[in-house]
Length: 585
Image 1 (cartoon, one colour):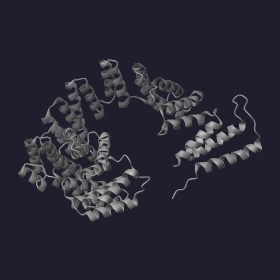
Image 2 (image 1 turned 60 degrees about the vertical axis):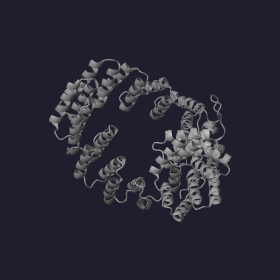
Image 3 (image 1 turned 135 degrees about the vertical axis):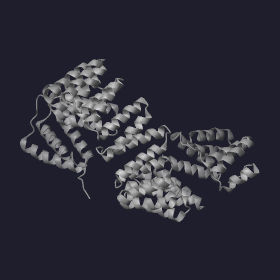
Image 4 (image 1 turned 45 degrees about the horizontal axis):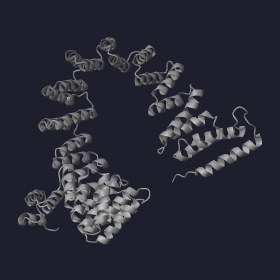
């Protein structure tokens, strides 16, 4: 285990060493600064010690030593700079702290404008805090001192663009080309700046100048096509695409560029054709092909277009790369989106056969099986994921509830207990609270409500803002008609924190129902239905119950019938529909 000397001990040692050294050298004072030579030397020493800690994990110690060095010698601009920089980075820094930090950084940059890294840090900090003009001034000075340093000149150009000084930015890129030569990057920047100032002809000429240096360069042809496409000059755009294809007939990037061109025109036939050509082209690497197919699949799903074309393209890719796990994983994701869980599981299985150590893939397999309500297989996959990623405590959040769904309550409780034994209730209080709440849900199910409520109370004492625990606690209190005021308070807090959560809103409605406040119950149950993507049988049943109590009995029966379609095994729903009357659960 790595050990760190505490900051108090470290500071004491540093001061003791420096103090001894200063005792030997005397206590002279700098007449102009008002800081004693002893404090100056001490500050220098502490500053060096702080930077020795910079690369360690002891960031707190680094901050405290820098702060102490600055306190000893406020004229030490290096210590002031890094104290200011750290003020900006601290999680709990206020706006005032950040502005103060910026002022401290400025002292050093004004005194040492040649310090490259400090100047760039300061410029970035100015931009972050909205002082673009100050950031620009720093970069202008730094660029003046480093006329041939490309990175500095690029930063200066970007600063000009942020301040909408496009002509000056253009001049900077021209200077860069004087010592770097023309490139796609700088020419594209120059063309974009010409466009920004309304000089379309200049933008085109910039790109033509670059193109004419190597007209047989495929990348240059693609850039020319993109530019003309941007300006709505489709004939010129397709000319350069065709030219690129003549130069490299098997370049998959060219086919993909053509697909994008046809997609922008709304030509779905040629779009599909070029996507197919891109995927079968030997020159396109598998990762790019996966990106292409992901984009294509997303587009087709959004358009509710034919799934046959997507399936055919996936089959082509699988045939080309049968031993590539990522291909099978993407195909599985597509099947999951289409709610074809059988084939989603099958493709994930192929991928895991090729790479059985992929913990994320095992976790995805678990999720797909949950979606398919195949809980035993989901647990099996989750346990495999744990073998390869034993530190992933979130997996326990899946496994225990799955046992709960299967009514294997002893295994659910044992799983929660195993997880609780491994979690620190202080460091991971949210997770610990969730696990306690989950165990409480199981205790309710086995009839131990006292034990459950004790667990809920403990969960909320550890993490008072745990809205999931509040919701479940409130719901179970309402079911037992106990402490309804407390249930209402917790349900209200859960809904206020999650105003679009249909489950939480349903609980709130049900608490009002139990308190016989049917108007409020009706208001919130309608809100729950509106916020649910697909209202559950429970929510619809509650809607029917509330309608019944408000006197709308015919509509109540209709809602019970809808709920029964979603939950055909519910005896209580069958009784409500058959007898056309409300029954307690």
